[in-house]
Length: 451
Image 1 (spheres, rainbow, N blue to C red):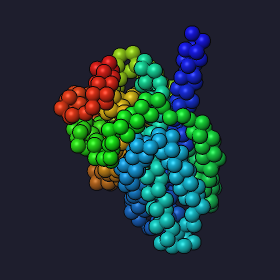
Image 2 (tube, one colour; image 1 turned 30 degrees about the vertical axis):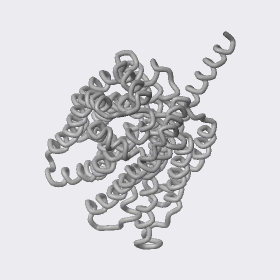
Image 3 (cartoon, rainbow, N blue to C red; image 1 turned 90 degrees about the vertical axis):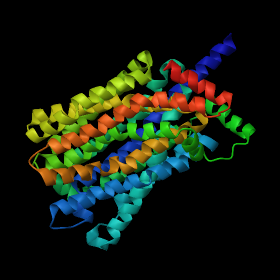
Image 4 (cartoon, rainbow, N blue to C red; image 1 turned 180 degrees about the vertical axis):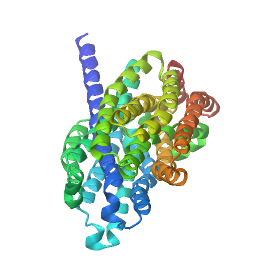
């Protein structure tokens, strides 16, 4: 009896450490990513792409932001292989080192004034390294947390990785709010990037204490006994092509965060003349609210099933965010901006809180890292990365009308809703139709039915 109690307590401790490790690690990763996104919206164009044409300067700066998405799918493949075949923990340690190191190097870069064309070239290379890192980080953090959790807490555990996004946004926004425009342009912009080094040390210390989950270890041993030599991506695309398509399209609505934090910030401060501090304050308040929305949404999902919750939350996101956000930002009043931005964080937060837990129900354990990462990150590369540039182009082409931007944003959420609706049905069908070993197929089928 005592032995069983000790085992239960140890499992609980492991689950808590895994959830904490997922939260801290993704907070650091997203801090790094948001630091660059905020800098791209505010200052990168002036430092690395000097031009008399404000629109061209803006598009070039946002273009470097988009470049960071190009290697995300490659990161999903590389770190998915490591995470599915070798070690979830090793994958997460590498991604954290790569992201933190790249961010610090950006903070040390000479500007265009110092080294000319080499400044933007080096900037793009470091952005590619960041994108490679993010490609593997998200899926690994989600799985380390969710696989260690008990069945009735898996959505909540997975949401700990999702909480890293608003937490990282809070930290990044605070660092920029503390600096004046003059201080930013004179070198203060480097400080948020260099601070990543401190966060990197903290994240590594926490992640080194993580242990491989028994569920993953068992799956890895099954693969060895089956003498499975195919790459995880090959098996994902052969065995779950339509499921992977649903994950890809279901992730389109994630781009809403870049609508708000990158496009809207740039549009508001650069075109509408809204004070930078006001908009950053609204972003900070919204991110703080999302930190609390995320676990609440996940607990609801654990009660009513993650699949049902994901559909409900995506519908709420579609109804209450795209049209109000753009209209309220254009209004320009302080109250309107705060209401629009916070409403956006709540709507997007509901959708995003349960997305990772939802995706994990669609794949077997030994393909799960690659399965959820590849579709999600491919969506980021092909859709999310170009959203800020697309929105800027729409504003330029149709100003003063905001309807095209609202329709663009709404369409991304609508197609995601359709994919989320069909995802579980497609996954069940493909599990039944593919000749998977019974030990692999049955647990996943039971999990999908249960959720």
